[in-house]
Image (tube, rainbow, N blue to C red; front, side, top):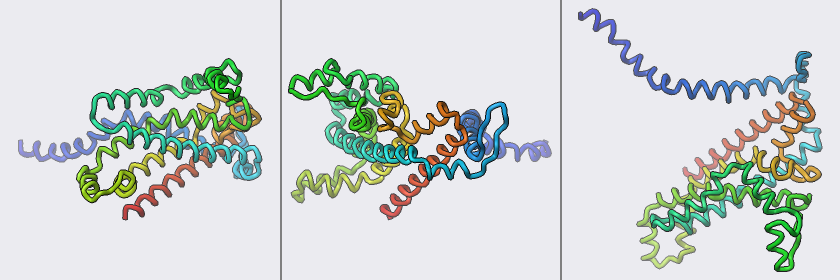
Length: 299
């Protein structure tokens, strides 16, 4: 009996070590099949001229060299950076403002927060269809009808090269600001109330409390919101594709919509894979830089 116990003893620590991995195995398998393998395969295809049923032709770094000489891609990059900067800044500012207005445990405040949060749970396709209907470019559109009553319009919105991208950015701010609001509300709830009481005793104004207590305390939260917003802004696709299809005249084309166009319409899978790989590298580098900046600020 003692021999049997001695032999079976090492099995228990082994099972304890393998137990968590067994629970995570289905999720890891899903991520590996639907995330990691397509990612690796995309990087592999970026070095080939993909020819279905004829065999892929190895082209080395030609697809990546094409990135630097493609004028349409440069235009898409400018649109993406412009969109990401304004949409992220707008959603952060609006979300922070809503969080200041709707913080607190009161029941009516929670109801208002739930109502404000509703745009976030709407599918992006449905939100884009809603906005294209509201911003219909004629005097019969809902927004143009209201603008006409005050002597403005009708405005073209999505159908003009000068306003299509701005209209998309407004839609993105409306969609993502409530999500940022929830994160900021959680950050505001974690701030020590004694700091506000001390400021009030010292005679600090609301602006001074906001500047010297609230904003410094929310730096980690702001970094998280900024990282998520930049990642979301760099890979924007659905809202632009549904609302404007990258037009008119390419005025709202983003990097991802251009990538999809190369794959689906131009049948250039290798170049599309190179675009996706380059976008992945840029996203990872920017995320790492922002996280390093956050660590330096904290130290």
